[in-house]
Structure formats: C-alpha cells, structure tokens
Length: 217
Image 1 (cartoon, rainbow, N blue to C red):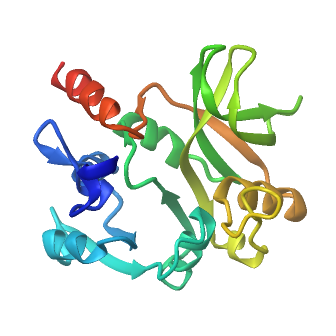
Image 2 (tube, rainbow, N blue to C red; image 1 turned 90 degrees about the vertical axis):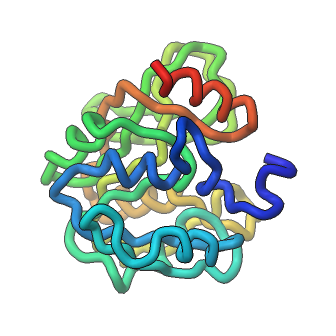
C-alpha cells in the first residue's frame, strides 16, 4: 500500500465512506455481541477510533507484538475466545449473508471459499471425495476452475491445542490455513468449505478503487 499506510494502519483505509474495519463490523451477524481485534502496526489508531463499543458490540483489543503470521495473531486472543468463533481478516470485505451461512454449522470447522477462474493467483483449496479440505496451497496460480479460501473461518477452542505451523518451510511466520488444516487432520475434526458469493480482496491501491466502484453499486 506504500504511502497510504505510512500514518494509517491498512484496516483503517477508507472505501465508500467507511474504513475497512467498519465495513466488517457492520456485516457481522446480529447474534455476535463481542469482537476481539488483534492489532499490530499503528494499532493505537484503531483503539482510539473505535473505543470499547461499536453499535452495541463490545470491542476488546489484543496486541501482536511481533508480526509472526496469522496463526500467531489468533493465538494472542485465545484467552478471550470460548466455544465457537469467527475469524476474519482485518482488510478484506465480506457479505453478511455469507457469514450467516458459515455460522449455522455446528459440526466441525469451516472456511468460506469462493469459486475463482483458472487465472486466479492466491490460496487454492483442494477437497477430498468426502468434501473435507485436504490441501490449501497459497500464492499459486490456479490451473482449473476451483475455490479460493477467503480467510474467514468458523472454529472452536480445540484449535488452540494444536501446534503452530509455519506458512512455508523455514518461515518464521505461522500461517492460519496451514495450522488449522494440520490440527483438523491430527484431531480428526471435519474441516470443510462453505460457499460464499461476495469477496473483495484489498491488497493494493487498485483494489481500493475497485471496491469503491463495486460498493457504490
């Protein structure tokens, strides 16, 4: 994001009149009344802006002192999480209907996924004959019409009994897709996808402009 994030953390960048975190808070299902926000770079800006309550939802903040990956970020919040919980990225944009469909499940863990074309580059989800996820390959080119993981998970606290898994061999960062998949396989917990219809990835200034156009419609 370059100069856009010199003084502003990425999740506070604005699209269609709201910052990226506000967009997510506004589409959370109504039965979610507490949100844990894991903050890092310029995290104080997020805390100052939102405070402790947002439209009736209680907000808690946990600081990830070092950027050690998405799994490490979630692990910082484990003492505040109970039973089932949703995990969302702080920057991408989602739809409430997709989150609701994900939350209705009570059997195992789920990852929201969206159909993508053959030229999509990103995290591709591969499934076995029983519908369970068998592989998540990140930063790769999709060679068939497949599904991309959207980094929205329905999990429960059993995941915290599993060891953290590096996002790539030799990496100092721990990846949430790799950690959840390994935990599901080790503990024999069903790990499946739930289809989603709407997803805007925010990885560049061009994505912000595209999101502005889409949301204005």
